[in-house]
Length: 193
Image (cartoon, rainbow, N blue to C red; front, side, top):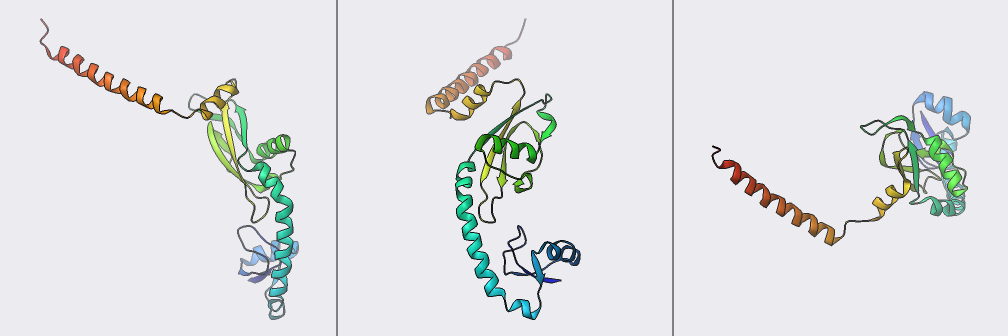
């Protein structure tokens, strides 16, 4: 089934595009929701008008949401969770939990369906994308740590990059260990009486 999109649809196209979609998707979702119409010759004549109108509304929406995107871009969210020895969580961090954390931290309403992220089931750093509009998709960093760990310790390990002195000290220690290992090998090679 060929349809003419009336609105921007994520992962399908922008308003004014003519797309071929599955019959059920078009008949049961796109047409009843008013997101598209059948691509008849009469509707195709209106493509230019639909595209102009959509670009105006898209620009207005992008202007409104740009302040929200600026707040959210690069945000770091911390979640404490119970986890096993291997780092696997007892449960998961869901998009609903991420949406609530964004609402609490930035006083912005974000729907859980606008967040692109698989449920997080292991400790560590993860990334999520928040679809505010079809053009504005800020990235959020999510850090999941073991419940009971101090948050300051986690933050300090992230913020302190290894300096050149630390790297040189580690390299010197490695050289000393190799030298000591070769001496130990020489001692063990001598016959034991």
